[in-house]
Image (cartoon, rainbow, N blue to C red; front, side):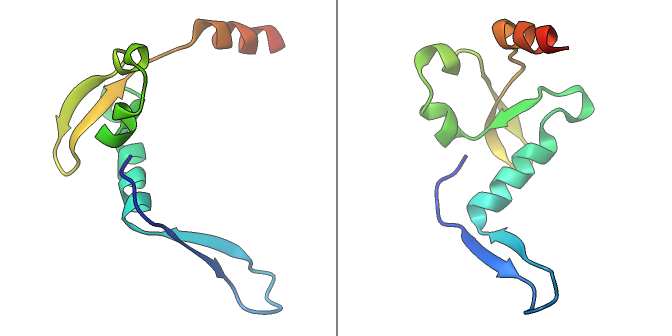
Length: 93
């Protein structure tokens, strides 16, 4: 995920009942593109940028693979399942 500023704006006009928050900026745009690619066309469901991957510890970096994606450049992808978390979710059902 790239670092940078994001602008948050409350949209709507007084008395309309519309009170949405809109986020804008390069960092938000990049995150949207990564999320759009993740899991599509049999791809891995996790896509992160090099800045995010670089902040992970060695073990977690090893769970991701570098990949070049047209329009996004180098990204890191993975298909990671925490089995203990999966067992916890299954126990709730």
